[in-house]
Amino acid sequence: MLSAEDRQCWSVPFAGRTVRIYCLFFHIRRKVSRRTVFFWSEPGRKLTFAGLGCAYLIESDKVSGRYQEIERRWAEIAARSIGSEGAPEYAGPHLFGGFSFDPLNPSSSDWREYPSARFVLPRIMFTHREDGVWITLNKIVSEYSETLDWQEEIDFLAACDSQDLSEEETAHADADIIYKEEISPTDWMQAVEEAAEAIRAGEMEKVVLARSIRLYAEQDYPIAAILRRLLQEQTNSYVFAFGYGSSCFAGATPERLMRSKGREFHTLSLAGSIARGATEAEDQRLGEALYHDQKNLHEHQLTVQMIVDEMRALCEQVDVPDAPILHKLKDIQHLLTPITGWAREGATLLQAVERLHPTPALGGMPQDTAMAAIRRFEKMDRGWYAAPVGWLNREQDGEFAVAIRSALIRGREAVLFAGCGIVGDSDPHSEYEETALKFRPMLSALGYLKQEIEAECCK
Ligand SMILES: C=C(O[C@H]1C=CC=C(C(=O)O)[C@@H]1O)C(=O)O
Image 1 (cartoon, rainbow, N blue to C red):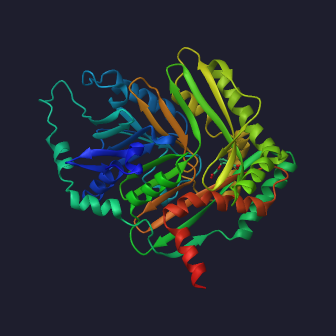
Image 2 (cartoon, rainbow, N blue to C red):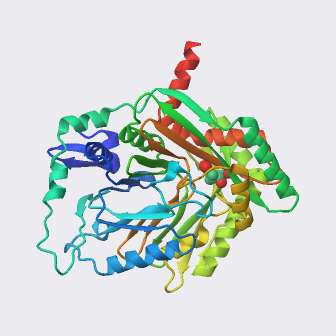
Image 3 (spheres, rainbow, N blue to C red):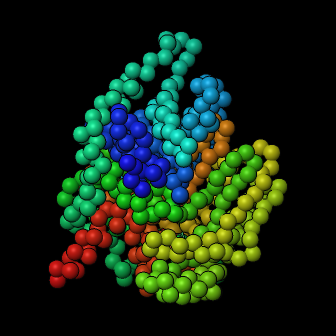
């Protein structure tokens, strides 16, 4: 009998039982250290991918030209790929990876495994959709290659004995946190005040400032259990994980950057936030307050405007509704405007990603001034936080999200990130509170909120 969670599409029949695919992959990664893994699940969980190993790696350390390099090299491989007959497009070769937020910002050792652009064609990929599950094996061959041998991949899968997997599936996400490190609230609010002053002085219109929290736990963080909690709690978000070497960058983001299918391009503006209410009435009151709040509407509209301008450069037609809608997540509600375009001949997904990143929901307005202000005020390396992560298929279609509500996890250490849009009349204290809300999805997945509640109860 499948549980509700199993039916939500991320479980696969494997070795005579039902296994959650993220457990399978993170289990193998633990057994065979330093394996490349990824996980990607759409909001609503209609499509889930999990991948293991690296059949082909495309990296770029370029400051400019990184999108073109990934696109060119993937197009070369994809054009010569030979797929199994009858396999649907979503079970064909897919490339997964991401870009750093700002290649001009000096990178810290935390992000050593996450360069300016890093994409992987996995050796083994699971695709899970409502209509079935596929396992795809990828291999690069040349005209001199001998016959294809899949034994190594099959051995990997067979090596997952069910007892070990049960451990992975039931592992506790609630690692005991022994130490927490973060910028002092006063220092961060001071940076917000200075940014707001710069906006009032006419230096720019908007800038997004983020902060980070570093947690140290008693034992290594169990990635599979963290993903399980994100999948359970953040149902309206993309759940993603990119594990390279000893680290894993994971999160649950509500923000699509771009999805393309043929010439149909779909993006959205997500900016403007308020808390969820404790009761339905309070929730509605807060939602209405957000919907009519001039500061949040202004922040949101700047993002809509930039996205529409960039989409017009790529598309013959762009459709945008007159007003945003409220988008409710577990801990927070946002203003959201969906934007759709019909792309001009030759326009590609990565061209769109390059044009849009970073939108004023992650960077600011104007883009260059805001990026310089982020370097000046934040004084940290965002790495892949707030940057595009996603996938491309053989036809160069695919989907990218913005990696917010995320954390970089390495062994017993996790660094979480959250930011918010600053405009001229931003109140530093409210902005600080807003970032606290945005940390909640990852704090909860890491077991920190539970620990805090327990500590409160024991006082
Ligand atoms: C930068 C973040 O959120 C962005 C996305 C939605 C709403 C936002 C806001 O209201 O400020 C932010 O622009 C983050 O979660 O770290």
